[in-house]
Length: 562
Image (cartoon, rainbow, N blue to C red; front, side, top):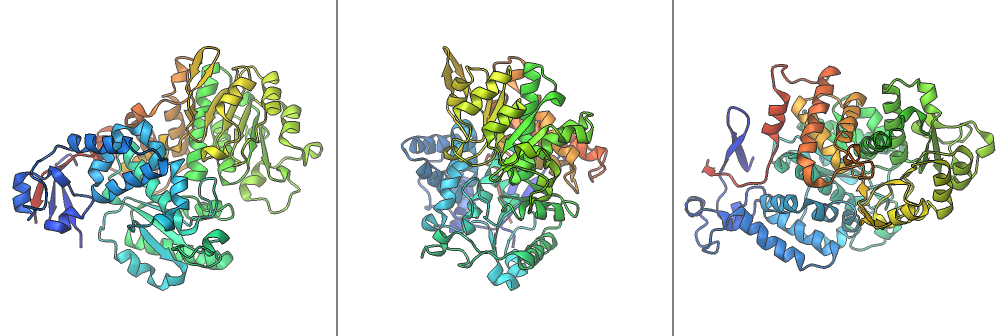
């Protein structure tokens, strides 16, 4: 049974909420609980008299008190727990609080702190959130989905927890990544939090630490693989689409062996997206485009080296390759601009067990096979160096100095996260390059002082793009996420770069304008969906107005009794 319904005006704007819940049931329903903000009339109408202190607060007053409490907490993981406790009690207040302090709190509810939350999931468990579909109980998948009270789910975010951030296999703890990522959809692009669903596919874990931990809450079994894995994923996604046929499926943090395969298998069947592959690539592409526009260098002349050729690294390479081809560069010419290095050295065509994406960029230069990163940087003189390796300190002083000696303005992006796994710190890169390097990182870093100037470091944060892509998909009622839609998102974000006006400025804006950025990204994605013939929204709809009408904002509405 649905706990509440939303009443909309003729333009699709939310004007009130109708619910049959009263008393403790209403106070315990996080989506519509107002806490101390229930009016006297609502307290009488919904059997709340005596259940709340006498004072009636505004939402802003509630948020001010919560922020004062937040500031007294010193540890980031404790801050994360505090904010999640608010979310479990009052979603509206939670989102208003975090939106009001987004630059400060996004690293707490999302990366990098979310990595610590994932590792502590079983130990800190206090309240279930999301849906758990276990291989051990696969006969109950449909029943589990039918236990979801809402029939209106716009986005499902699914993980199997095998490739979490840069920390690897954390089994059932991966659900925290889904929860955090869905928060970002709401915080940055106004996706209604009552219309999203985090889903954990529990296929076991190969993390022996978890298997030996008596507190571990997941299926205590080695990960399934091969046909067993594929059949389970197919059974789960078939049931999900049966229950929520119009939902947008976001795949997240799947392992190297499965991430690309799963995306390729399902992206043509329904609206499907993988942020590790497509989102990271699109955001990095926006950063590269911004940097090149700022220093007035043509994209087609760049030589790009990737250290780390897993799902993230090859995903970034593919998005940049697509951008080059869409700009008019011949496919084979474009392919030769990419050099990918993994744990066994340069990706070469005679290697065994290459993924489909790695084969796309495999090289034939035998003299560089097995060489280290420094040797390759010395030999090919790259203009762009991107790290997706999770190897701390991989970008050494010699590598950066060698690169800077050959390139006027080297572009260096250590994208691995969390912060502790970055290939180099921005301060080191800027100092080693004598201030020449253009830097963006995967995790947040403090500004760098160099030659009397304060340099703000752009975080190549997917939060700038994947929420807007989702909003564009929903607003256009797209049936697929095409390469053209993702390319449109990259170009839209690059238009917001401060470096276009000041070449010394960061390549990405701050989060102060993230709502306007997400709306603009959504508009360009929706327009691309129409161009590609995958939009099912009526042509008469004004997309800009429609995007604004479905953009959820955290505020209290009048309540009516059903």
